Structures are given as structure tokens and as C-alpha cells.
Image (cartoon, rainbow, N blue to C red; front, side, top):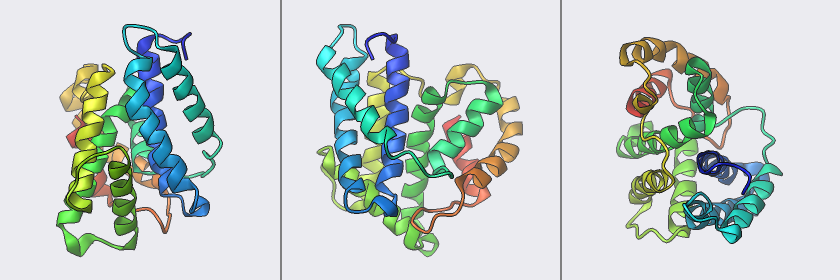
Length: 219
């Protein structure tokens, strides 16, 4: 950790956060996956800002390294979740750093879930399970929430705050990607990302139109 420049540490931390979110939805590690994912998320919110801060914090860097190793042991599923499929697609399309794009996509993905919460007719069992999972994560990092819907919204805000603390871009526009070029690429990226998500009974599968909106919101 300490051999990387601050931006690289920040990128790795946000990629790790996305993987932790994936893990908490994985039914095949149910029973300990939730607890491990929540513990890693707590570490990230607590130690990532210090690990990539102006002063070298060896304790925080060591803590982040251990969290990486733990999550790395459970990265096994062949298909990606919403965030990783979108970030991989955008990164490939515009040659952008994967970790930085994850930091942009994560809040946009959570906002999609917030909107899904408000459209109850669109919620299926996988959406409900995903929302409950992220609500647990929100509570595990000490966010004061009134219900699961509120938890998702506040988790999105917390991710934005963390992103700002570690100095990562807030939008795709900050990468100086041309707006018209990006919007022209959105339909094709959305189709590729949709195929990358795969089918998981325990994970929500947004429509291609939903993915297009997430990509637009990320810009």
C-alpha cells in the first residue's frame, strides 16, 4: 500500500468497496459473507482517507491491505454486478482507470436503487434483497436511517463524501470525456454492460434503459 501514490491507493479502495458490496449480495457465502462485507466496508470508510492522506499512516495502510486480502479470497463469480459491469464497460470504452470509474458509478448505481424503491411495482425479490443488504451496510457504518429506503439514499451520500475525501473524480465529465461522444456511446455501452451483469437470482437485473440512465447520471 505504501509504495503506491495516493491516487492509486484511493482507486484501489473504491474498487474494494464495490467488491464488498458484491460480496454482501452473494447467497453462496450467506452467513459469513454479510459480516465480512460489512467489516470491510467499515474499514474502508474508517481507514481509506488516512491511508491516502498527506501524511503516511502505516496503520491505516496495513488495515486496507488486510481488507484487500480478505475480499480477494471471495472474488469468484464469473458474472459481475451492476457497478462493476458498468465501470468495466466505461473504462474500456474511454481508456479510463477502473478504480476511478467505480467511484463515479457506485453512487449512480445506489441512486438507481433509490428510484427503484419509489417505484414499488418494479420491485422484485432480488431488488428487495439487494436493498436490505445495502441497508445493513449503511447501518454498519453508523448512518442514522429511518428505513431501508432512507438507508440506500444516505449510503449513496456517504460514498460521495468518501470519494471527495480521497480526491477522486465526481463524474465522467471530470475525465474530460466529450459529452456528445459519451452520449452517443451510451446505448452500446448499456447493452454490453447488461450482458456482463449476468443472471443472479439474488441480485437485481436492471433493464437496458435503466443502465442507460445510470450511465447518463454518472456523466
